[in-house]
Length: 182
Picture 1 (cartoon, rainbow, N blue to C red):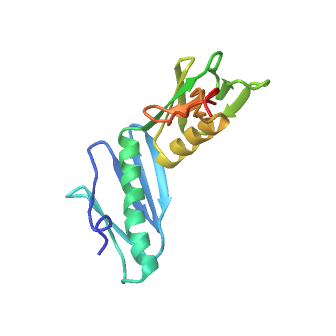
Picture 2 (picture 1 turned 30 degrees about the vertical axis):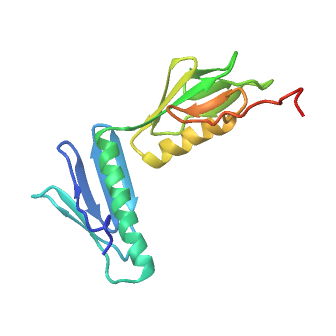
């Protein structure tokens, strides 16, 4: 049995779970999410114990993989609607900055043109300082994807560490060219 799949997902207070026709819906203070799980998975919600359990029909390889995956996705949904997921990005470089205009994130990161990214629905983007971008949302996958798209505009380079990186990300610095010694 899957170590992750057999654990029940505990549902905190303030989160509502609805199961219907192969779809699980979660609703909480941070938003609403829904997920269509695979037909082989059996998902049950025990309202007395406030737990969601996932079961698989047999020991086939695909069902084993889907068992843990389904449980993890449901857990992320329950966690996300209770308290939103957050990614913080730092912008390093002279003259590099970010601005938020409505649902457009404008990045000036050393190119001739300003890069504009549209913030996806269900995601909130904050720019508390011109060199810090905070991405928040209930859906972990969408938050991570949008943060990766922001980082992809100008990834940190290893010589001067200029670019966009995640908070706490370590970029290994390289030495420049060494002159004189042979």
